[in-house]
Length: 269
Image 1 (cartoon, rainbow, N blue to C red):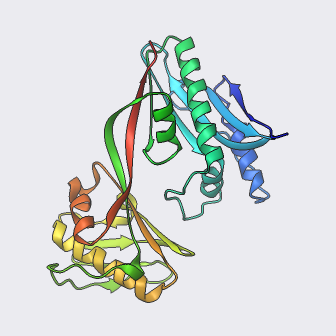
Image 2 (image 1 turned 90 degrees about the horizontal axis):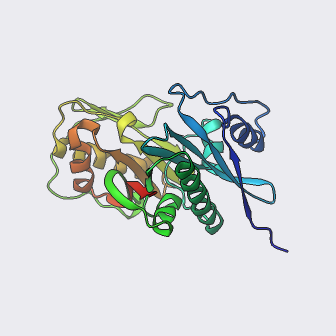
């Protein structure tokens, strides 16, 4: 008989330790991991979803209970990659099982938040991911777009016309990326995917959007030439990075938005 998804609620500040340690052990690193401290002292607890004893994901719930509570989920596979410091941290499609788990976890989070007197539950995530699935299932509303994930297939891309000429050079190995025109771009390549977090991997103070677009185009061309197996370059770009210059530059370089990251809000009264 098919076993259903079960939920575990741990309502104490140390509730992070078991799920993190469990996932760390699942990737067979032979090491342990300490619990994630809660410097604000406002963690209400953690919801963990399982099927047949296997962890599918977890939600950490924070807040004082007087008005709003914030929760944020993490899938077990993504947590495992982060714990072992793998570079591939971009958006990975969720399975139907994970989507089901997240709907149930956010529903439980809403129950727990309501029980401590909160009137609103907040979380964030992509509209195409399990967080967005939970928002639709629970009739939460979007309160603002906070980030975007842009993608391009280097092998199916052609340099857009009209970009200015730029002078660049490759970063010294083992780093992958380029430097030039007062900017530096670093990309992580893993298998058939390359990933770039704009807030951490693009340094371009005062660089105009068209110059940055030309640099991104040079980066895509470099990936196509030196890493022909890469089928996707994904760029995580969010509000506040380089005063919106990255957001202006990426479409000029031929990238398109694959996912949008939203803030969600669920009224509890």
